[in-house]
Length: 224
Image 1 (cartoon, rainbow, N blue to C red):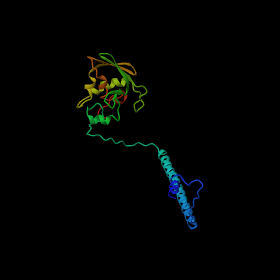
Image 2 (spheres, rainbow, N blue to C red):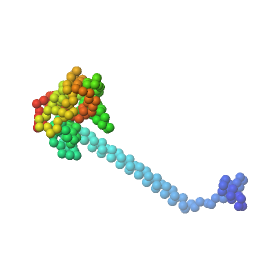
Image 3 (tube, helix red, strand yellow):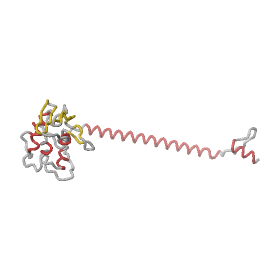
Image 4 (cartoon, rainbow, N blue to C red):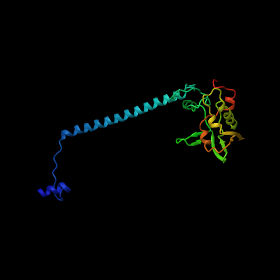
């Protein structure tokens, strides 16, 4: 008897033997069925509610987005936080970090610093040293100022004339520009910078000041 029980427990009923099952209690079956049915209905209601909720939320978001996109474009006030007191929106007036932090959002430069402060293309797409005293810069084509005027080499020439000579400037951009003794316009999108002696840091210097167009800045003072 003991052996038969162990074999049945491990491997199932022994061949040829009879297994007695306890009769089920008829009174408990309907209750189990009712519980199962109630659980199924509750789950169905939950899924139906979730579908309705997501559908309604999607409709509300869609309607809100549509209303937002249908609004006419309007001028907005831009607020820029600067960690220090700036003195002017003229990018050539004062070589001051807060001024640069502010005007960087308005004006552009020939060369940009990358994340490691290495020169990367800005308004100039490339540059190269033609010899020890000559640097050539290729300017980005298709650029326009806010009034639609195309950006050309003449705007670089105007900036080189203006930046070191802003009246009453506490410190000018001359330190970055004066090493260039002569700026040569090769074509509308090429300039050459001639120096009196080798200046290997010319690309880095071009990261330090902004370009102002001749049409936009000609005759304009810092107060303007």
